[in-house]
Image (tube, rainbow, N blue to C red; front, side, top):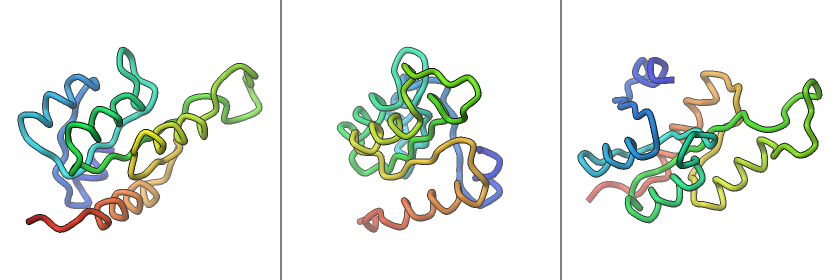
Length: 121
């Protein structure tokens, strides 16, 4: 994703955890954060809530491929990908993407979310 976004002209910074992402934003604000929903320690839904509370001007896109997606390996007790993404939306995510996704879909969602942001003062 980083290479795709960089080739499209975006400046990209990476974080290995929710904690690193929050620390990076405290040091240097960003227009957009893309987070996975399923992560160790702090999940993406909690990160969305944290980001929206602490950095209300930062847009957030949540991605997930977790849960039941295909009939193979179906587990009735598993949470579906759509449920994870719905939870992220309810937490305040400005956009969501289900994995796997195409490059064009990623870029379209990123551009649409950034286009909705209010102009900088």
